[in-house]
Length: 366
Ligand SMILES: O=c1nc[nH]c2cc3[nH]c(NCCN4CCCCC4)nc3cc12
Image (cartoon, rainbow, N blue to C red; front, side):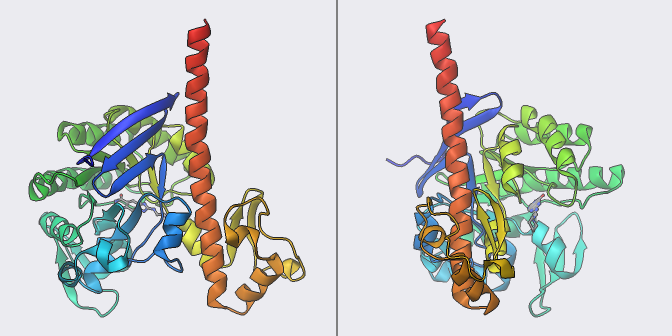
């Protein structure tokens, strides 16, 4: 019988954790990277390929899907999994961050946020209750609370106001979500770059006994050192037996350093967006296929990769596709980049297990 929702820690290495989230639609091996599928599609990818590179879960966006094609329409068509042909877990962001970064004429009050669509200017309102309702209509497996993410730098009283509002909205989302076995609602820690506010936010959310916790309000322009410092402060305040999700992160280096500080789940548009802009992630660093130096290079991106996009096509061909703005260029580079990110996560998981094994072996042989 598939678990309703469970998180098991299977190994640790310092503060890094290897784990497994089990839900009815499937298991999520952590640390996990979630490809971003904003409008119900991981851009330039077939869902079979997304699964093929090793993704256990993808991210969808409430904001985009409520505007187009509409949450009620997706529900009438059987929910997001049937609509997009992705039968495995989906995590949906709640929309607040996207409203503040994309929409026009937005107004934020205690009740929620009103805004106009960036697509056609139509008026919308999003309350904590409506965000959870929309995520339910999408049949999302992991639903994020509605929150207010403060752009940094910001004044301490502004960060405090948004953090406290987000806590009140977390309570309202918890009430609206109710008890849905097989699904989860995650809280989002806010508090900007303030240690005291981060601790207050994490402790208040922990008291709500939620199924998982995101660290929000980061990757919003602050230096990596500030982001990592906030993780050093926040993660120890969160329950060890619940998943921790760092929203919007990040580069391979961000991910490595965040796993080392206790983060279990990530999402970022970088691998997919970079692929559409001609940029390839490889084990030897990033390669910009727009650059003329690749025009005659017969070598593939990575002859040892098990991803056809990395192994079977010359850099010269990829350069040609990118320069010609051929759709296949975006498709192959996106495929390569998601494969690179999933291989990174696989190597991270193995390294934690190996270190844990060595530590265990050392204990036994002492
Ligand atoms: O505090 C948040 N609450 C809800 N959703 C969020 C999403 C976020 N996404 C990011 N950063 C995205 C950074 N990304 C990096 C690659 C280029 C595009 C922007 N921070 C976030 C914080 C939040």
